[in-house]
Image 1 (spheres, one colour):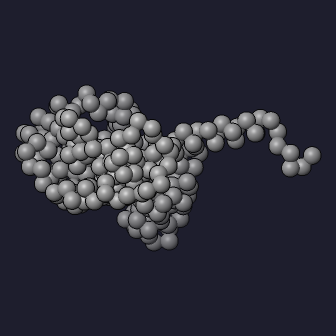
Image 2 (tube, rainbow, N blue to C red):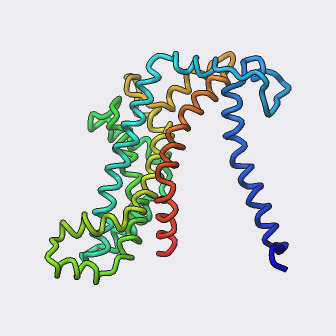
Image 3 (cartoon, rainbow, N blue to C red):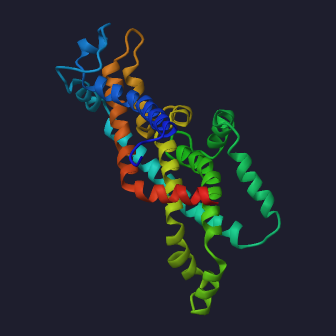
Length: 277
């Protein structure tokens, strides 16, 4: 009968619902704890609701010295990495897809291998590298490593989008009098833009949430710290301020959600194009 769902489909929908609840519950608990009064947070009888929501935790967060500066630093670092990685990856993906040159395959394999190396294994070598370049205690020590780690993934993903554009389209553009530069930016760039959005989401989230590099490379000049470092203020030797931790985490999550909402339509088509390749 029409309208009657098969048992397999019902089971799949139930599993999807359970996964969605499991993923969403920590976010719900984070926001809930941010609005709970201190007495409810410290209570042993934890309830998944609050009858007296309070903004005290958020007040403590925004009263922290240099919190606004940390927020702007995070925006600057993440925005710079997103823009530079998108532009460089687009040009590099076009080069390795449209041109034939020596060691092209070797270069692609190196991009793939670079994604397999754990970030933690390279933190100490990167520390000495940033020190030798004079970039310690600067935002450059955060931008450069994140740019380097974002590019391999972005190039591999955009390569599929560039490869999907027919070469006949490029030849037709040249016949109509378009230069290589015009074809690159006015024809090819809009066609692979969904892929750029998908890679930008990856770059933004990994850079925005970074704690390891911020803790390792920003040693003495706290004015160059980013938002994840602001959470350390609420971790105390005697007792952690869980309300402040949850409120600061909620504030950190808002830009990521806003960024995702703005690009979600392009993101879906971008991920779909990546799967096709």
